[in-house]
Each structure stands twice: as structure tokens, then as C-alpha cells.
Length: 407
Image 1 (spheres, helix red, strand yellow):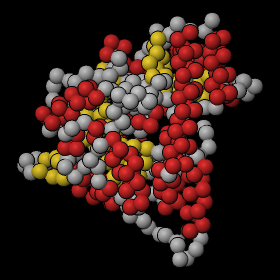
Image 2: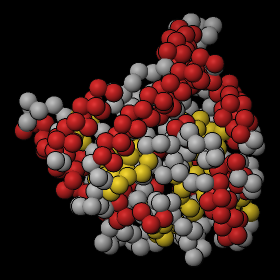
Image 3: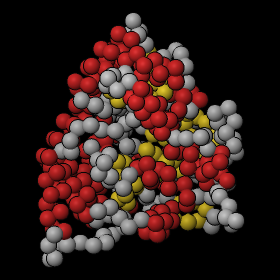
């Protein structure tokens, strides 16, 4: 008789976005004449930038010729992309990152979920609430928590993000070993100042902790005072891993490409107190379980670093931020408080009522899909997330429907 990993039984019955999809599918089946507008899941809607499409075609043509065909590439990613990442993403901001510290992957969700494998199961976790579900769920799967009790898992120090602290969690009063931070934040859209990130780096250095910094939405930052990378903070190379994605900057949600930066200065320890390179551990895990991102996809990703690529991706993120501005203004006009939408593509709305109830209201009365905040954690209750990822026409139509439904 084969036994299962019983930690999986601690998880909630299903994944948040699976619950949403199920409810929306049931509504659509029962109301086929009422078209639904989806402003829930953070999936992009606009086509890939032309430079990426051109690069995909050219690279595919290379794969069709014997003299330029490529089989397995380096698991860590081709040098042309890793070097472009350093040159265009980090060097201009004064961040010390080397090309061999960049690991190309098929998505930040995968990396955020997989990184915990290289750490002990008895480490102390600090995770924001509300939060992207993958951070919590993968640690539950690994056995670092108890069973869910009243919406939370014993074994996690929850970092409350509330209206009182501007949805930027305070540093805990107790030590933690592995700290998850996401800025610009998913789901709230909140951003952290340089001073706030400096405090987190100081905390991590004091407790010999590691910060897992999810910067998937950094390309939406427009405030010049807000850091784009944790490595803009002095000392962060010794305590932080950073995750980046091409999904939102270049529309790669269906194309799949991302990268993780693991500095060689980052250390962790075994039970005997011996020091180990986290970079070496991640490289070992990465090369064992991953065979690399397809060559044409990496060529398409590298294309965004050309002059034309930079202009096209800026236009793309500006477009979604334009949607976000409309949503935020419409929400404010309805008398609801919200954050986000200025440096992030998400608007976090304080509804003042049960978040699933509000979700059902918008679905049934306006045929608009949002994301209930309770699905992101206990502190998400009373909120919903509205995504700016859709066409301008659909966003305008959705806002008109919402205004009519909430009269």
C-alpha cells in the first residue's frame, strides 16, 4: 500500500483561482446570454510586443536549420539573456549582480514555490497576509506547518497587511528564518519605500535570515523614489533572493519565462553549524530538476532589452496602468477606499463586507469577475482585488456595470 504525503491533506480543499473558475463557469453555464468580463486572475490580454514576436520567428527558423539548430541549452539559461538581465535590469540601478547569479526559468510562480526545497523543514517562516497563495501552500506541502486553524497555519508568523499600516507589514518582534516579501504587492498593489526595505534587510542580517523578494511587478513602478530591486539596499546580497518575471512586463503569461537571482554571497547553515552556499544549492536543485527554457523563448525575452523592446514594453505597462487609473477613479467615485493602481496593475478595494459576498454580487449583478480578498489570507477579508489586465473597452464596460450594480 503506497502512502501519500499527508501534508497535502492540510491544504484547503482547492486553490483560490480554481474556486473562482468553478463559480464563474457555473454562472456562465446558467446565463449564456450574459457575457462576463474577467478582472480577476492576473492574466494579460494584449499581444506580445512585436520585437518578441519577431525574435520568436527568427529563433524558430534557426531551429529549422541543422547548422543553427539547438538541443538542450544550459539549465541556468543562455549567456545572452543572463548578461542582458544584468546589463539592463540591475547595473543601471547600481545593483551588484553577476550573470552567473541569474537563473532563467519558466516562471516566478515555479521558482517561488520551489525555492523552499533547499531549506530545512523546521525553519521559522514569516509570510505576509494577504499574500499570493503559493508562498504558504508550498510550505504546507513541505511539512513546515500544522493543519489549518481558522484560516491560518500554525508554524507561520503572519505579517498582517492592513489599512492601518498601508498594507505594508511591520517587522515581527520575534526571529524568522525565511521571509517572503512581494513589492509591488500582489494582491494589494502596495509598494515599500527604501527605508522600509532597509529595515527588513537589517532584520535579516541580525537574525541570519533570508528574504525571498518577489519583484514580478517591478516594471509597473512609476514613483522614482520606490526601489525596483532589493539589491538597491546595501547588504541585501548577503540576505536576499530576488524573483523576476517576463509575464507582466512583456505579456509572457502563456509564453513562460522568468529568472531568479541568487547571489554567491548568500549563505545558510546545516545542523552542525557548517556554512553552505545557497547559490550552489539552488544550482544543484535547478540542474537536477529543470532542463532549461526553450531557446526561442529566451531569444524573445532578450528582445525586450533592445531600444524598440524597451519602448514597446513601456507602452504595454503604461496601457495596463491606464486601465488601473480608470478603475481606481471609478472605485473612489463609488465611495470605496482602495490602494494600488499607481505603481501596480492591481487595485485593492476595501468593500466593508464579506469578500466572497461582494464577488458574487459583482458576478451576478454586473457579470464582472474580481478576486475575493479572503482567498489571499485572513487580512484579505473585507477586500477584493480588481485586475487592470484587460482591454480598455472591457474595463470601461465593466466599470459602467459595477456602478449600476452598486447604486
